[in-house]
Amino acid sequence: MSALFNFQSLLTVVALLICTCTYIHSIFPSILDRNKTGVLGTFWKCARIGERLSPYVAVFCIGLAFSLLFVS
Image (cartoon, rainbow, N blue to C red):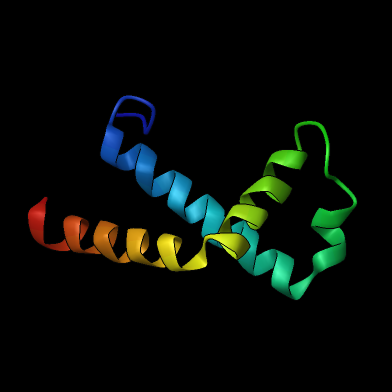
């Protein structure tokens, strides 16, 4: 089943995308900073979300991990 049809998998993919983009931006900021518009601008926006909302993203990732490990 695709992640588009399973809501929990979709949330997992979005959380991993935000965390990955934030990590890449912290290591190599020039890669994402030159692509602020267009389709590749989505990765820059995900990095911004991860940087500015990091406590909320961390709580969301912990909750998602708990849900994947113990509920499913």
